[in-house]
Image 1 (cartoon, rainbow, N blue to C red):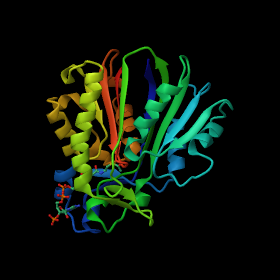
Image 2 (cartoon, rainbow, N blue to C red):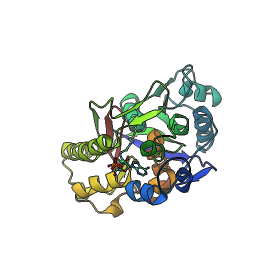
Image 3 (cartoon, protein in one colour):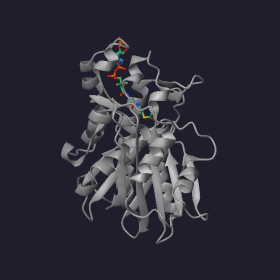
Image 4 (tube, rainbow, N blue to C red):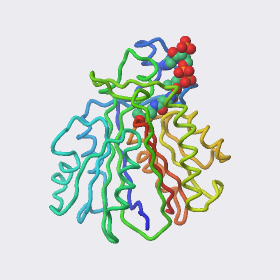
Length: 297
Ligand code: ACO
């Protein structure tokens, strides 16, 4: 059993922040940011995570009626109750027999939601998975090693169950001190630790995922990886001996949008995927955590 992504959408945010912006705030340079991370710009918005989620929902052209499940992945929404997912259901005038919840797995959140949806849905059922991140609210603009990395964003997918190839893998590793939101609601990160974790363990997770399916790395058509740092993406692909034309990136324009990064990538490239394409999609982040799937499009 697997999941078919029927539709994918992402919002556009007007307020583009170039690397130069940070030169006036912290001791950094545009050249350093771009060369160490691959990031040229990101977007910061004044809107709430909830508003970005609703804006994303409005972009779905197919009917959002008869949904069985709505999951909102985010670590930055301020809404404690009701969940953003339940509010989306109210907004679309959805059915009452529907499971709605928000999920916080930071940058692994969208893929965690996808894995749960695949397990929950029966044949014929549909789920809406939205990721919304207003990370600019949680940035420490005195910490040059973290504030330059992140951007705001929101995107989502409409999915239903199918009978195609599907396998998943998850991982939760010690790492509270590596990446967390502190008591002042600011992101604290040991970049080196997160970098090492990601380049080593994401590679191992993907290798294990491929082994489970008896598929060689080269047989995969696309590798979609969480957009945290272009060097992490390149290292993972190098270790798997995969050419860079098998991946898609947008970190240069968006920075790290946490849970929203993968659905933005899927939405931007939706028209490029063909039936029978084999795709590995991997999220990783705070936890430290990994959530990845191998799917046939
Ligand atoms: N501008 C200039 N210099 C900087 C900056 C900056 N913005 N940030 C750090 N430096 C300095 C450091 O202070 C250090 O200086 P020092 O040698 O005098 O001590 C030097 O640059 C090298 O620092 P490193 O940490 O070794 O730099 P590195 O090449 O590892 O890059 C980075 C740092 C970009 C943070 C990298 O480690 C990284 O991308 N890590 C992963 C981060 C990540 O993916 N986080 C999100 C996870 S997803 C989630 O769940 C939210």
